[in-house]
Image (cartoon, rainbow, N blue to C red; front, side):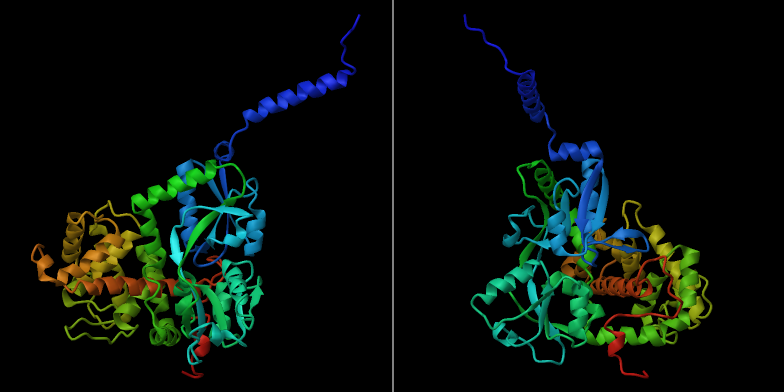
Length: 479
């Protein structure tokens, strides 16, 4: 008689345990379900002007704003962590401690064994930059024998390595102890010959380093994208793709890009030098009044200061050919309206300008959100509420959004063309002027934000003391 027996109770336990494990594995939630269950989206980023930083209102930056909206679309909180180097970002992208990286990353074929990329949300061109006054490089041959620096671990470093295969004379240095702003400073101060970076990084920082110029484009534009862990779980990637499709369709992506890049290329070398010089020589005389007016009317004093510079170069005696006068260039009717009795008195002018800006802003439709509401108010301060309303009507009639600055600023210039202004209530206007007016103020405002809070908003900068990296160092001594 043959008897079948299990040789060990342990073997039975192992078999049952294995079956249980296999069954439970079938029910394991995917990454998107885990994120929703845990209630937190963990995002890696970089602390740079093009990605993630803090201003007086808190966290901001293009990557932060995109990540915040994505987390909101998932119904979870955002946990954003700034990482020191690009190599570390890819190393920490494991799906558990970090779900994705939103760090201004270009799609890099050399990293495909470490990460998967989303569709692109912005294109940027690899560029070789040099210092104004030095010989402009126009091709790879001009880089031979020069000191060139690039961020370690970047797609640009991999691109240069590939170029070395056919150009062994091309030598460059990789560094993970610098960021893009450091590369620009090194070029600006003539400490290195060239740096390689992306066009979006240059355009945002160039006002701080006005001596830096583009030598040549290293290649065609490349797409920036989010990076996700390299595994078989597609759930989060699919959610990311749906998110980008949605914000492309509803215009949110274009609006965010305009917010962070739409005013970035305003200042040329001469303009940046003049702004830095006037910031040292003139602004300290009026800063206290800008601050007091900002406090009284709940405005950022640096926005008021930027307006004052655009209007008069901080000159209280300024006068236009049409009779507009003073630091904030008030017309006689406007001055009377806001209670200014002496337009060339700088304190009266500053407070009057602030009062009028708030009044204009309060006349705008409540449907216009910030920060667009501020840009609309600035445009109306310049061209008048009537012409702004005309431009908004043209915007709506052309199928665009009259509550978004990115759309309305395309239609303001039409007010100078008879084909268009003949359709409006208030008629002809120099519609290009308010567009340039707003762009200039946004750029001056951004610079003032950077130079008056170099570390954080809590680190107070004494009134009248500024440090603009790369600009002030170039000014002749004693001016």
